Amino acid sequence: MNAFSKEERVAFDQVILGFEDYLVLSKNVSKYQTSGTDMERSNDTIWRPQPYIAQSYDGLDQTGNFNAATQLSVPATLGFLKSSPWVMDAKELRDALQSDRLGEAAKQKLASDINIAIMNVVTNQSSLVVAQPGAATGFDDVALCDSIMNEQGVPMIDRYLALSSRDYNSMAGNLAARQTLTGKPLTAYEKAYVGQVSSFETYKLDYANRLTAAVATGITMDTQVGAVNYYTPRATSTAAGTGETSNVDNRFQTITVSSTTGIKAGDAFTIAGVEAVHHITKEPTGQLKTFRVISVESGTTLKITAPIVSGQGGTDAELRYKNVEVTGVASAAIVFLNTVTAAANPFWVKDAIEILPGSLSVDSGAGVGVMRATLENGIEVVMTKQWDVQLMKNLYRMDVLFGVVNKQPEMSGILLFGQV
Image (cartoon, rainbow, N blue to C red):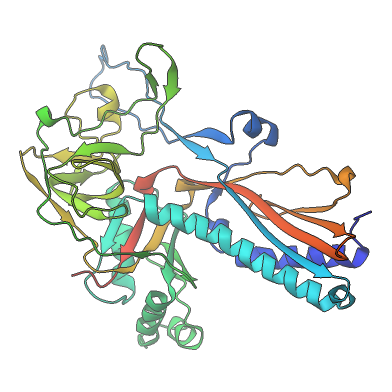
């Protein structure tokens, strides 16, 4: 039999207790609990709804204003199966401390995998971009993240900002020098702790993604109505010929530009004359809308987020989800914001990012020892053990299955420093 001993079960419980401490990012995103049976029957993909945006009109007579609301949704997939295996032979098993250390190492790696998966989704699929010319200084930097969210109607609660160690420590250094504040400067000096700043709870990352500098120049885009570089939100699409209906992912749009030479996934940019609006009031903000390149599709087309919902097509769905005001010109200049390679510090609203815990079915009657534990974020950790009699070794593995989805790229972003 390969059942776990009492000592191993106690050790596993201790590993799980420590696991929670490492899950910095996953504690600050929303959670959607999935059904193992349903996910298996749907190829591990489920469509999650985005928030509705309502319309309002003046006057008593609302004839002609009763339009069907367009429900937008995004696909969420259990796309991450992370496993940390190790082996111990009959000699190594004499030292229980060795087993504890290996379990601790597995825990650290899997927790890191979960945090990195969340960080990758936020940094690669977020459309809000704040590019600062100098090093991180503190309040003024975070306040710009606050401003870009407020201006576009993003909820003012549950906001988080994760910074690379160097950027976080630069902020802490600035805070430590502010002797006019009580308490916080001393904590910043002693522990390099920043805490809550301008409505964001801040966290320090030991690893942060870096966004390389954009190299493309002279790129333009036709923003006139006839160029049809605007987007019309749709709940579903119907396949030509078959009439089959399927859901539509409205987070991305393919646009046509003068050239894609030198452009790469991740690049951040603005378009001349394309101004962000408040998503609820539809009032212009006076600030250019920021966009991200998701992929280069051809020599003249790009997949981007957020889509350009300008209302130029005049449909009700466009007016409901309008996010920009466009002054149409034949050759609107595209200006890239990531001019210098730097850490991409993610910021987000909790409800924008969602983690989907998955489950694994292991047949304990097939000669494998199995232990399970569910973390605070809903992710199930499965530890299995099997004895290899030929080699006199115990094979261990610790597994997690989960998904991460950015439900709303316009409620998350990146903060870049040193951009010139």
